[in-house]
Image (cartoon, rainbow, N blue to C red):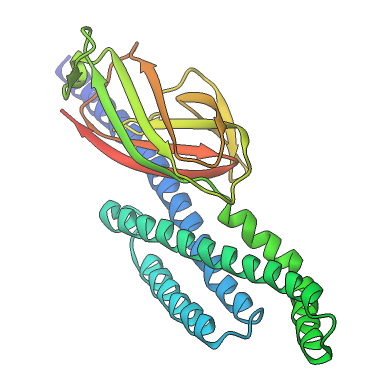
Length: 280
């Protein structure tokens, strides 16, 4: 009888260890996917700086682009060396990535502004042969790169979720830090102002990963990186290019364990923000 009890205990322990191993493996795969996406963006930004330097004849702007390109390459080097489960460094490099996106967006707008200025100069200087020829050369150069510039504008138009917060509400609607008293989860964030993004209805997906590696979900899915991921909450908003506050709610109907929860926000097939929260 004692041997049977021991055998059952060993089997139960082995099953729990196997389940925990699977959870850890799933969390590691998602972390590696997140790191790979960041690495692709850094590499793309570094390449874009090289392309943008060929589109202008302004030495001052070229020097600025070179400096930003070197900074992006250094951050890419740091990202390649960091482990995917190093949450602190990944968070820092993700913030740096958002900064890089904003910087390259400003240069895209500046080059686009120069393009429009040159088009105006063409109409104004047609009477003067030398000025007309110079303006014509600049316009021809910009026109041949219009397709490449359109791709950069698409990247600059990506939405950013900022100020992400997660709060637990008890049965009285008051904030609590204890998961066993939580009756609702509230997620707040802002969609940052972006004059390059197109206006209209956008569908936002929020994915809440629990400390055990599961996802709070009702079964709904969306596509991301050629995969079908479960989401916790979904909401459509009308985006006008201005900063837009968003609040979303989850009714707690299952057991929540204490630990770290990861909130990830998606829109237009991109992860536009994520943050971790710890609760007792």
